[in-house]
Length: 131
Image (cartoon, rainbow, N blue to C red; front, side, top):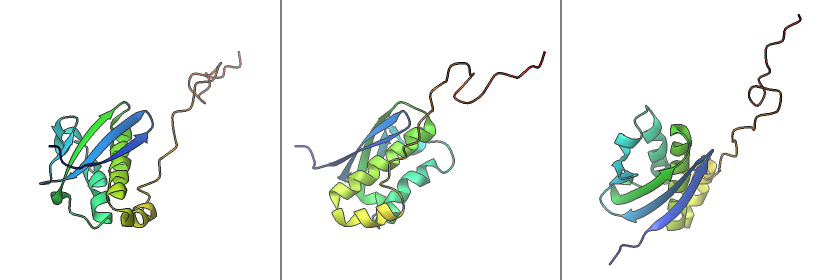
């Protein structure tokens, strides 16, 4: 029989992450890899695991599995962070206030601006030539 788990969905830019949190031994799997093998940039893993610190929980007492796709490293990191925070709140509603106060339950609405006609990118204009 499967263990009880709590699920949270996180999104940022083009990334979306499905985070499942269950009691266990502290394994953190992201797309079938260990978290330190998936998020290799300095500070990424710490930013995600800080949700446990804010909630006064130990990440050693929970197993976390994440399916994340789309976007780049930063978008995926923030999507996992939001999904983990939402799963913690589903597990214990008392954690909503500290996580909200630290900005861990707010979805970052910034996305890439669309390209405009006559421009190279969203706002970059071609070089002006007088003659």
